[in-house]
Image (cartoon, rainbow, N blue to C red; front, side, top):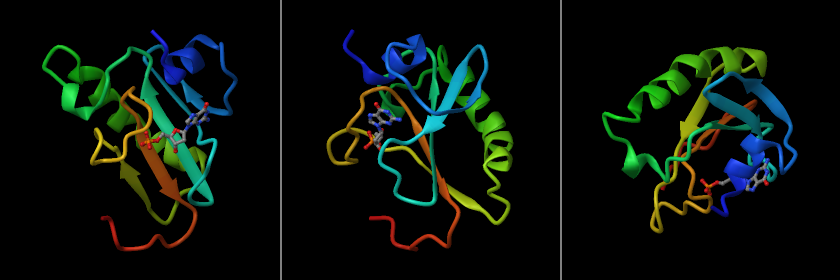
Length: 112
Ligand code: DGP
């Protein structure tokens, strides 16, 4: 499968890693939209949040259990935003579920 994030998981594309364990990986976004912009992904390929099922949701729970650790390691002590884009209207460009962690400044309120 030609998935950029699967290639990052396999080490075929380099990334600036901020966290890794056996199930998930977090790395700096290549085109940061805030002073801190980290992408968190499961190592297993799930196309988007629209494909979360009871069979694969435990890794998504693990991501959310780990985000506070990742945020602390990035010095996001004053808050941050978590975003996941889904599909065409959600402007999802990489079809491997991922969660953007954005922070390091006061973010704009507008979401849409
Ligand atoms: P989205 O639009 O939600 O699908 O966001 C995909 C993000 O992935 C986008 O902010 C840019 C980032 N990205 C795409 N390709 C790469 C890559 O090869 N390396 C890194 N570090 N980030 C990437």
